[in-house]
Length: 221
Image 1 (cartoon, rainbow, N blue to C red):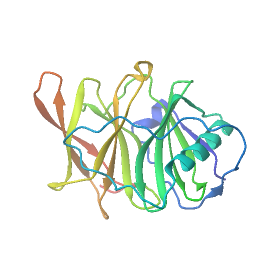
Image 2 (cartoon, one colour):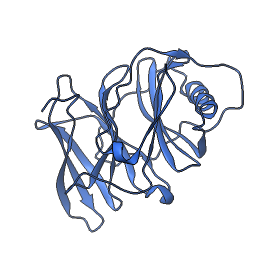
Image 3 (cartoon, rainbow, N blue to C red):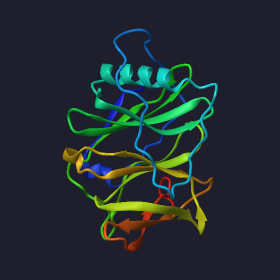
């Protein structure tokens, strides 16, 4: 039954969140809207994940999702919701809670959604030898496969590629200092992907370094 899914720190490093299109109807018109859809600007080198839709009311969807999050005990902080992805009639959002968790969910107009997933990331736990950490996914959303990941504080993503081809990606949010202050990114994955994506990071002193993140769905190699 759809509800709030909490990923423990031990499970985060290999989280595999599959967001299904099976939806539950949001309660409408109850409570006050919290947060907005504003998000930090993406770096100049980022690839747009989607173009705005003239038929999708993003503020309305964000308000509906904020009400659902509050009802499930995952209310956003005063920082509100950050738009991670918009495509067609669906949108994905990321937010932080007063309890120090980071949450992710997708909502489909006119207000149906899948589960809200929340992770505790107050203690950075990247992949061994990597400056990256998968927070949500890889999984399948309403419109595409995706992964949401964090980069080590002090680094900036400059490219995300799969088999030599640039993927659509976006800087979604810079987390609050108490949640490590890391940047969180959304990347759309191609159909049939498996293995790894290659990520280029720029250090604060200007040097760029290669990194990679596993994006295999299920138990594939």
